[in-house]
Each structure stands twice: as C-alpha cells, then as structure tokens.
Length: 447
Image (cartoon, rainbow, N blue to C red):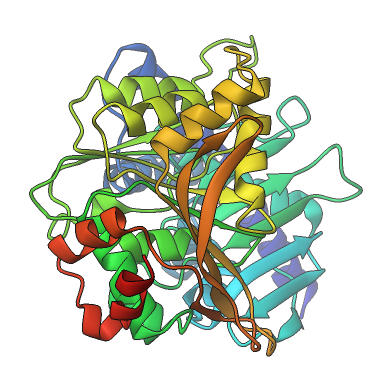
C-alpha cells in the first residue's frame, strides 16, 4: 500500500472514531434527558433512526471542515465505509453475532478479547477467534450493548465494574472489568425461547412422557413448583416449558434479575403478562429495586400467578407468602445440588432476610407454600435430566417433610419412587392427568 493510501486509511479511521464517539455521546445524553423528563425509553428502531440522522449531520460537518481547510470532501466510497462502520459499532455485536446466531452454542466465555471459549449443546468446548481487536474495544462493545439494553442506560467502567444485561436475542450477558485481570464476559444463551411441556421429552430429553404429563397436570392444578439444579442444568428452560401449561386467560407477573423468560414477548401464548426486572443502585447508591420489592409490587397487580425467575435472597419471604395466600400456581427456580437441599437453601435465604424468621417458622412457611420440587441434574452419560421430584408434605420442627415421588434411577434419570398422596393425585387427575400414562394406579393403591 502506498504512503498516500496509508494516510487516507488512517484519516478515514480517525474520522470514523470521532464521528462514532460524537454520536454515542449525543445518544446517551438524549436518553438521559428523556429519562429525567419522564418520557419513555426509545426502542432500538427509534435509536437507529436518530443515529442515522446524526450521522448525516456529522458527515456533512466533517466534509465542510475539510473544504474550509482547502482539502477535498470525502468520496462516496469512503462515506459509505464510514457510515457502515459507525452503525456497526453503535448497534452491531461484531464477531459475537455469528456465535449468537449458532443454534448449537449454549455458552460463550470471554477471558479477554482474544481468549474466547464456546460450549455447545452436545458438551463440546472449542476455542474461537478474537471478538475484538483489544480489551479496550471489547469494553466499548460491552458499553454499546449496555446503552441499548433493558429499560435504562447502564454503565460499565471502574466505578461500575460489573454488568448484567439481556441481549436482543434473549441471551444473558454478565461482564466484569477492573476487579479481574482482564475484561471478561459470560454469555448464556436460551436455545428454546418458545418451549412447551412436550419439549421436555422431545427436544430437551430431560424426562419421559409420564413425568411430563404429571408436571403438566401440576401446573394446570395450580400447584406451586420450585425448579432446582446446579449451574447450567437448564432450570430456566424447564421453567419456560412448564409455563406453556398455563391457561392464556390468566394474568401473570414475572419477576427477574435480568429478563430471560420472555413470556411478555409471546403475546399469543400469554397475552396478559407484566414483566418486572430488578434495578441496581446508581453511583450515588440510590434507586435500587431488588426482587423482594418487586414481588411485593407484583402482588398489588392482581396476578393469577407470580413467576420468580430465580430465588436468590430476601424475596423468598414475600414469594412464599404469595404462594400461600391465594396465588397458587406460582413457579420459580433455585440453585441447589439436590432436591432435598432446596429446603435448606430456602431456609438460609429466609434467615438472611429482614424478617429474620426462625428455622421452625421458615419451614412452616415453606411447607404451606410449596407443593413440588423438580430437580435437574446430569445422567450417567453427561446429559441434562430431571433426576428427582419431591412432593412437600408438611413441616416437623427443623425439617420440611417431603416424599421423593421420583428418584434417580441406575442411569441417573428420574424413575417413580414413593407414591403421591391421594389428595394430590386426585387434584392432578381433576386437572387432566391420565393415570394410564402415569402408571398411577400403583400409586393410588399404595396411597
């Protein structure tokens, strides 16, 4: 490349960076002004229209500056490259686009711009090429994602070194900088956004038809269900499948740390949904709204069911109160290594809540609120599977009493175990459970 061409390329890049930075600042300032004025947040299409208008103005001003300096205006080819580059950096995800578009990709782990690892649905892990030219560009990418994610502008810098947002396709991104050796990202994709009970058997292959039929009947019978499991076992996807059994006429309030379920996006299946998302405090330490407060808010919105994406703290108290005070049919997930461990985890969260309930009081509350625990793990071949289902029976002092109606079989997948209580079985049959499919006559006789 000739020196003249190199100089032209450098000038073009400088112009691109300057124009992009100016437009990004204007968009951010405009969004902040709208927020302060109480106006609704612009959607992606509106922001693109505004960005294109600003881009035209910036390019015109840039060419006028060149002409005043006695230099020729940029040609059409250069202007097209600048426009494409600016819009891509403002609204695109760069190399991440291809990884997010791959339906087999489940997790993307980025430990610096050039250390990218991908986990596929079949368990394979592969190292991929860089997603940015440098860690600095990766930070810029995260900031661009943050600027158009959620319902407000979100910061990502040394003062706010962590970020948790949903991407346009519903994937969840967590990023960290400053407190890590390099800027790092973890992206968890949700491969089945439109999932049904049948998908538990077919596409996901986590249980057989009999267990799927029992779970569908439990949802229709308005049983309160907690889906548990370790990291990356598919709890959110399984919860999404269960929601497909909810009647479209019901009003649902979903409460999440970051939007993942997306029930409010499927208006055909669930036309009456209010989706609430927690909010972190600003730099002054104000404005935070946690899931516990959102549960209380959700109960004031006359829901038929409350769905908490993941229980992880003080929201356990208002959630259990909701389940035991007329909002039957509520659903949630929780991290736990075993189905029995769910009760200990719930008690620990309750002990850390402002209410500071005793263990006995907590267990009574859990026993009166929860009907079933559905646990996801890994079978002997390393595949995701439901391996345990517990029916909550009651509380006995420091213990929550439950029957493990499905337990891990020889292959690590759930097989029938203790019988359902007659009362519970009658409720499920009334909700449409086919005893022939379930082989439930044995349970009825045993009960």
